[in-house]
Image (cartoon, rainbow, N blue to C red; front, side):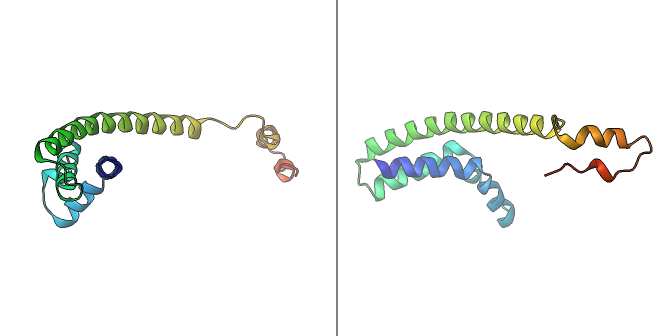
Length: 122
């Protein structure tokens, strides 16, 4: 069962990281299996469970459907987390530095004074 979980996680990350789209662009093909997290997870889990784990066909299909459904939700969760991370990193990048010792002296130096004292002391 750990093998099925590894195939599930690998399939979700393969799509989430954009590897499928990149391979499709490089091969100049529009193969739906490289873009759809549910399709890729279903077929990979089904193939793995039939060929490597030797689970009966009915059980393998059931496991593959459950994994495909869970892959959809995992991809949605990863997408939300990625959006939250991007928003947080933009907020941090646009935030002005506060409490930097040389920041106030830099502003004072703009009025025509020399800039020699604008470097913070270590």
